[in-house]
Length: 289
Image 1 (cartoon, helix red, strand yellow):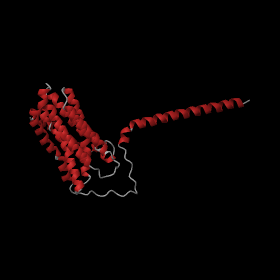
Image 2 (image 1 turned 90 degrees about the horizontal axis):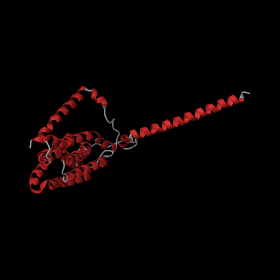
Image 3 (image 1 turned 30 degrees about the vertical axis):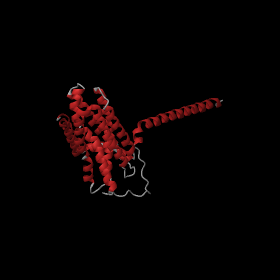
Image 4 (image 1 turned 90 degrees about the vertical axis):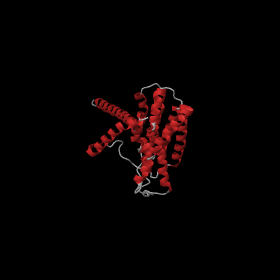
């Protein structure tokens, strides 16, 4: 007489177990999907741990043809990025009259370039550690060159803001930090000197780009003047992309943002000081002309 209730209890327990198993399966699937979607950036920069049996990385050559070639190519990249950004003063004065905008509105174009150069550079520098140097710099060169050539056919303020401001700025942000980091991997004793020579490309570009614009703009007009800047950039970028060569294998790096560093007062004060310096630096660069 007790068999029927006992069978019903067993069946009920089996149904509950089956339902719990299905719920757990659905929860696990949703959790895996969420993890996959939320970690696309981490997968992009994922670096497998180096095999302990692999030979250790040799020390920096600290000189030689290949190492100094990296310095020269780094100089060209900084020539194209910071040199072009620092030359915005000549565009500032021209755009104010040609686009019939206030100087404050025009300065947004150059300001966006600088913001993207630093903002994207904070993340693109990890490309070197992750073994994605050539991919990220290829995209950067394309964006930078395309932005310059599209600027040459721009006729409205928003055209120039999108091309010279955003597109060139994105390209610069993808190029600057990975390149300057690569140069440092080839040196130990001469590291400061090598990186200083590479960074001097900013001064070289700040000399050449404004002179080209000032000499050619009254003669051949805005469109072809900017196209010539684009051809200069195309040549130097092609040379740099062909000869820049990462020396170190991919290696693990720390978290995207090291929040613990902001607990150190000297570091926080340094960041605040640098922020205040750049806050007022580019008034002279943009408005001196």
